[in-house]
Length: 165
Image 1 (cartoon, rainbow, N blue to C red):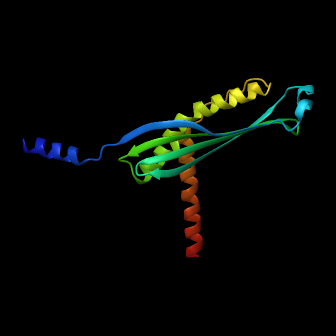
Image 2: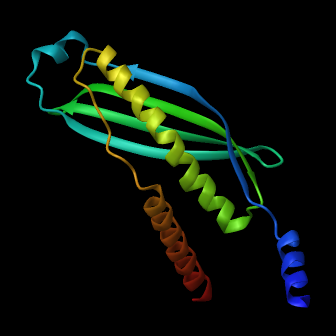
Image 3: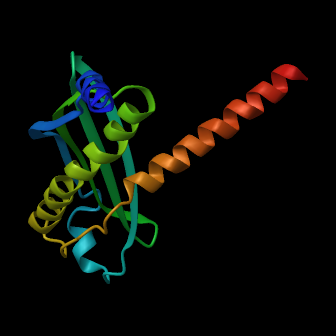
């Protein structure tokens, strides 16, 4: 009986994790066709380059803005056929997470929610620019976050080794 009471007290004291998507919005969109009409005279053998970045900002207590930036550059030979950049953002209420857990939620779960919206905006912009549809493959944000943590750890170890030398 005493164990049950202690267990209930421990559960009552444990912080409850809350994660809520409050709003998703398009923060910025840019589409450029530097070659102009000349792009349509060339044979379509595109080279696609994708850059991805996330930025987080604390807006209020337990409220965060996460902005996912995708930049797609499509080249024909050495010339840029088109360039599209999308900043898809969202407001997320996150409570009960701190430190590493909060960083992981902001850098993996939030961008994972935003990515399909950004992918759709890119595809629509490309099609409206009179180019073939461009469906981007899924992104493993957990793997990207783990890689970034490993790189940061190696840089910190390298800096510490230099400081010790």
